Length: 273
Image (cartoon, rainbow, N blue to C red; front, side, top):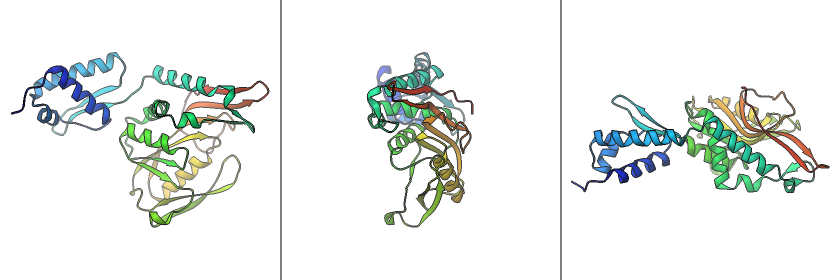
């Protein structure tokens, strides 16, 4: 029999395990064994943790009843928290020093900053936390850090669609797709063993203009008999207003750059779909 662990230490251990493993169910038996505590005692600890998380809007501690039940951490954000993250992003992006000749905006420092990226990923994952999703899918290369962070929050694997097949990945399904903005033909490829038949996926990317890439990924998933249950992007353009795909989720809307006024027109997007 190991030594008894006090309440503060128990709650610290439980909280750390839950938060580091979002969406993963842990039984009371699991905590009882590692903490050498009665399940009734642990239930009281978990009630306290649940109330604290609720009061300070730190996400949800959810319980599942029954023989196969347990508890898990759901890293849910409130609408106001997402609004604050979007406003923070707008302030970061709307800096005239980011303007690159040709109507582009420098964003690398944002998409490769782990602290900022985690906030973005939490916001993108939020609408899909309660949906059955097996994989996060993205297309190389800029979306990879964002996608892997989003996959971590959803506690599922991440898959990268390549722009061309690689010999090291075995037999590959490769297809052409038409970009929605420039109408160019591009190629995407994915190893056959990447996704099992019937899988449900969330496509995550940094930017969407007309939706050609998202449509291409959707068509590619059809070849694997997988279903795209969501499309989440950090930023979508105001024009064209009618995208090739529907029912996507975007945090921000980009309405171009006024180079004369040195102003980046970026806004929090209101998602109605």
